[in-house]
Image (cartoon, rainbow, N blue to C red):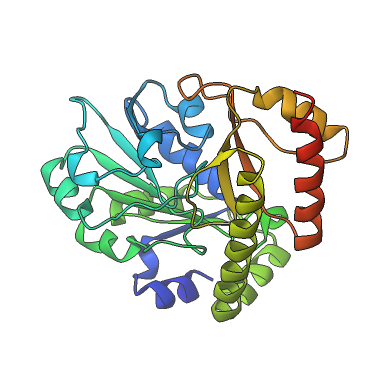
Length: 285
């Protein structure tokens, strides 16, 4: 599996670390290097929880969370800067062209690029890892490859960090069925990309239906999007949807406010049912 990943990315095998899910790898990296973390927020909810201390650059909602990485200011003392691309929870992508300059300007800071959703959109920076000793890239098979239950994640890391994690890894970090499933999907990347494109089309159609209800949605390149139900409360909406067996998680971001909710596409028939139920729910809140 490590050999196949290396061949596809053009990365030496020794720079690849595989483990039982990307969350485990992220926790390993934060345990080692997360003394002072800088985040681009809103971001993956796990990161503020596992950072010992963190600062934030707020992505502007009024600009659809777009941000020029050339303008990123790294606070002094930052040990780890985290960029999620495509970003979670809004599904937008960053132009990663400025990244090499950031890496050179901040040689004492590690930059972690979480590419959990890279199979859906965006350009990987994994190929840059051999050139930069402060660049870390994490990935998962749980998203575009649909293997969440198999718990397969991997990272492309500088040689010293990869060697450290690999030397401390369990003798058998993955079950054989998990390895077999991951290898099978790696051998059918064209199908993965085709399905990702289909999921994005369904997502755009669903977002358009939600907008007809007077709800703002933000641009996305993935199979989920962020919706702003303000002045309504997203938690109340989610509770009412749950009564119809529709499960959606409110964002609960203290700065964005209580109206934001991340919505993930389902099959078209299910999306239509969701839109109809949501219309009814919004008429009562």
